[in-house]
Length: 300
Image (cartoon, rainbow, N blue to C red; front, side, top):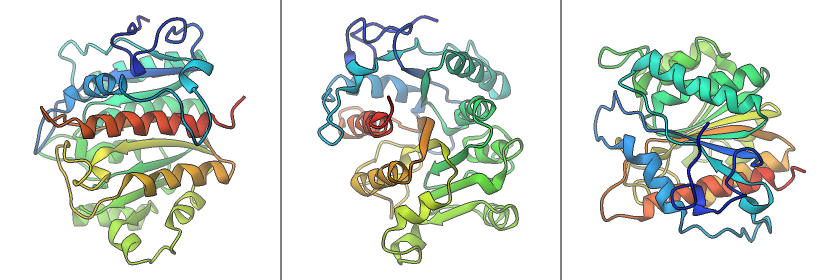
């Protein structure tokens, strides 16, 4: 499996810290865009994240780590889908993630549109059969199909729920959905923390604890950047008002560690870079590195 060198990899780090053979962490780039329904550009998201990451500092003051050097981060060459779409495209992603998991790598997948997340979730579920899914998003993505496609970005969680127990799915930040999705949540037992309920204090002041209380010991995270408020994340295809900020979001990951739970992998999707606007790209890159630092703080 080929990897990217220092000028193009995550954090722009040198060998040997970016070599797959020795790195504990592997970054998969899935620049897939086929079903976007409003703004486009998600195919450029992974490259924008990698480019911005070159300006993220290596040292994290909270964890007192230079994680990229102590554990190593390898960035796999972006997937070439060769015109494959829908299930065929997802199969390519899943195969790569499964291979990396078999090598005991901690895998981070960069999208692309949210439909890609079905693949790394399936790969991790095979590896961690008792895991929970924590889904950050403005949308619940539970439509059976959208605009004629069952593999739409608006339907990815419905595809996941076909092989994964819905009661082990926790969603946070949801603030835009159709009645079909609301009914799915109620009938299937998906644990959904709506933005409006969080803002009204219906899940206690420390809502982050309420979210993490619903999760099992092993947690896979799928993170759509439109979960954030458009004020800090305008570079996404379907922005929604009343979103969330960076610091309050990090408190969710801190609570995961406080409760002794473990993030087993994650994906970050739906960044649609805007020319001349750099802060969304670097915010996303910093989010990824911060999540890794918090997870690996207690790992040997």
